[in-house]
Image 1 (tube, rainbow, N blue to C red):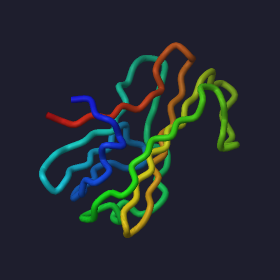
Image 2 (image 1 turned 90 degrees about the vertical axis):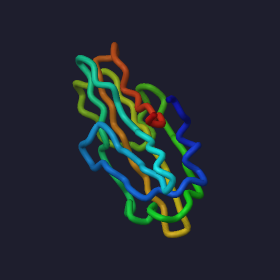
Image 3 (image 1 turned 45 degrees about the horizontal axis):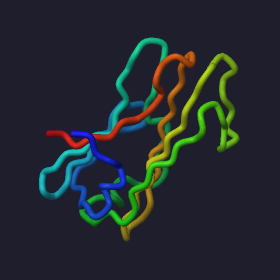
Image 4 (image 1 turned 45 degrees about the vertical axis):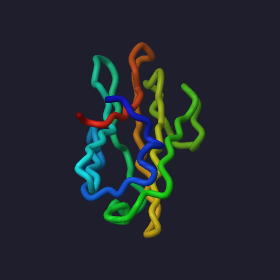
Length: 126
């Protein structure tokens, strides 16, 4: 079932499954609800978790106070990071989560020839 990432606010996460390089990250809450950040892979594109800033353990067993998604404009480079010349299109998506214990930023990076999606999706598993 589709959901919005901001809906994570107020939830208490007990398990996080996912790491740098993966194409999905799972969040399991204290009431056994499961949420998934993921990318549907197609031809001629890729999108995965490129970086995690902060300690994921800071998100566990404490209510989420901040849950926010931030995405760059298509083809823009707001971070000033070097982008390989052969990439026709790219998208950075940042997922910001915070509890009283700390902040975590999960950065996704998608690239394609411009004809395919580079987006990250979020849903609640049924």
